[in-house]
Length: 113
Image (cartoon, rainbow, N blue to C red; front, side, top):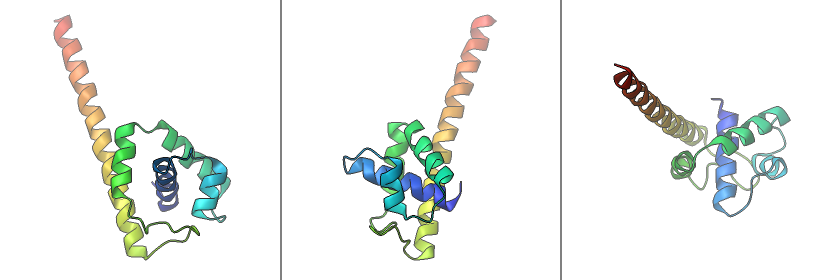
């Protein structure tokens, strides 16, 4: 996942936690006007597809200074750390879903035997 996409998702989670519904306009204002519209759309779609558990994981990995009100980044190392934490949370969730799917397939196989 690109750094920009991670920032868009983080911004959407931040807006959501503040009680606002993330929209393209709000995200563009939050992350700055330099982000291409297709990337904003992809980030918003990804956010909307996230489960509450995924959103909680992202929310815990966001530091208050990762994206400022002007949409500028903080120190690159801090931003990279936030991106890595987001990726870990997403990979953990993906592994959990794979484990559930494997269990379902195994149970289905046992029922057939």
